[in-house]
Image 1 (cartoon, rainbow over the protein chains, first blue to last red):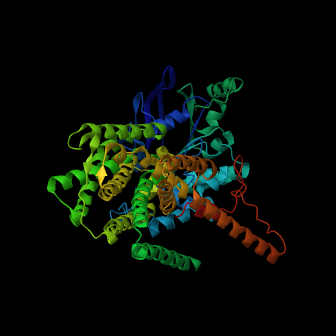
Image 2 (image 1 turned 60 degrees about the vertical axis):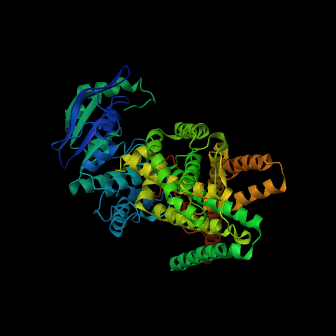
Image 3 (image 1 turned 90 degrees about the horizontal axis):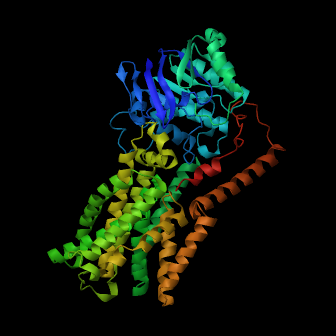
Amino acid sequence: MLRAEGVSKAFGGVQALRDCTVEVEQGTIAGLIGPNGSGKTTLFNIVTGYERVGGGEVYLGDRKITNLLPQRVFAAGIGRTFQLTRIFPRLTVMENMLVATQHTGSRRTRNPLARAGGRADRRRAAEVLEFTGIAGHSDALADTLSYGQRKLLELSYVLVADPAIVLLDEPAGGVNPSLIQHIADRIRELNAAGKTFLIVEHNMDFVMGLCGQVTVLDYGTVVAAGPPEIIRSDPRVLDAYLGIAEEDDDADAG
Amino acid sequence: MSKPVRTGGRAGGILAVFAVLAVFPLVLQNATVTTIAVDTLIFGAAAVAWNIFSGYSGYISLGHAVFFGTGAYTVGIAARAWQLTGDAVFALLPLAAAVAAGLAVPLGLIALRVRRHTFVVITIAFFFIAQLTATNLSVTGGSSGILAPSPNWDAATFNNPFYYTALALLAVTIAMSWLIRGSRFGLQLRAIRDDEDRAAGLGVRAMPVKLAAFVISAIVTGMAGGLWFYFIGQAIPQFAFDPLFDLSVVVMAFFGGLGTIWGPLLGALLIEPAQQWLTLQYTNEYLSEILLGALFLVVILGLPRGVIPTGAEKIAMLRARLRSARETAAAGGPERQRADPVREAGAPGAPARDTGASAREAGP
């Protein structure tokens, strides 16, 4: 369904991605793992139009989406969250949700001066907030949410747009264990209903427990791909993770 | 069911304010007072218009004097060319709007490619280009500028046509600001203000949205400039394209509340009469400018979000405190909350709290 084919990207002298091929099948939960700086977020940025590719192509189904602008990638059916959660702090939670519903709706409701969020959009947004568990904060300014609630809000407004595939960048990063479980349950439920996911995550239990297929990046290249049980024992993966564990730093570009 | 009552109360309040403004020059016929009133309404419209773009989108323009001056010169040149006078000159205001809009499109396409400080600097550059152009062209009358036709209206009610035209412009601009703020377009603008790249990733086409707001804002500013020119009686480059114009509308919007509907108007209603009064009272014309600068510092340092948001927040906090005090008294102690993963999800962030108070802060 989503296919990044031979994607390369360099930032100055640093080769962030090198001939990287990642594929996600429809209806699956795929994982993308790798040490810090291995190119995971760069790949997300390229797929979602936030970075231009240096080489290679990106396809959604049969459609080539290489180098489309972020708004076009989103309209094509790819929604994403960010590693450092990005919400609209001075909008209410409901308004955050409505931003993501702007591109939907009939021509009449696309009237720019029509009131933001028709009844159907608001109802749908309220349902999604109920599902993720932050419906009680619907009228609050997003700025006042806690870190974990912001993660849920970002997930919520991506979901309300009903994209064909959802890319999650570290959904479990920096949140407490009970919320991690809450997020994992929501992803499983959505996947059972047919939603496709690609997840970047450092929490191995989270990735291995959720994903049917895992791709491992190291220094911008794919070093392994397969089901979690194979990946878990792959020596190249162990080497990539354990080898870097001692020299790991905080400069997380991955 | 308090919402309809509150909405009804608000609509009643707005009607009452406009009713007072409508009879104002009939009751107070002192020419000095009505002159200050006309200036205030013109600046009110300009401040509300500036806020439609800068307040909602977060792109702070310091070059709106370009549109103000363009409106002034458009009315001046057209009135001279077509030898219009009296009420007919007011009919040139849509032309001023059209010329300002026509100028705003290319300027917006250039300036809106960059953000924050770079955007501000580019708008200032536009301002200087406009002022120098007006000084050096013969059609604008060079450094001596253009004189407005002087209508032969009765001295006692001379200011009234200006007053009511300015009031109508202000009312329409506020209605536009209100309509835009609650619309899809307004939501997209405010999303751009908060995080433009994230908004793009949710389907918002930022450039057309920003440009539309810039042009709408320029249209009103151009009309305000045209009206101001006719009222003042002349346009010369350093006053038609005046850096103090931008400083004034910015202070008005920041003082009342950036990005709110009523904030810029409140700012204009307080600051413009004060400035005019100071200028009249103390012949030193720089005093009001020094005080305007000082007020700007006080607002930025002490009330960065403006009077209306801060006031609304304080009132809401007071109400919430009273309500919780009542509830605590009724329940005989603080209510315990059920354990819930989402509520506890506050790893590095602040804990969840009742935010009804601050949610209203962004409102008008």
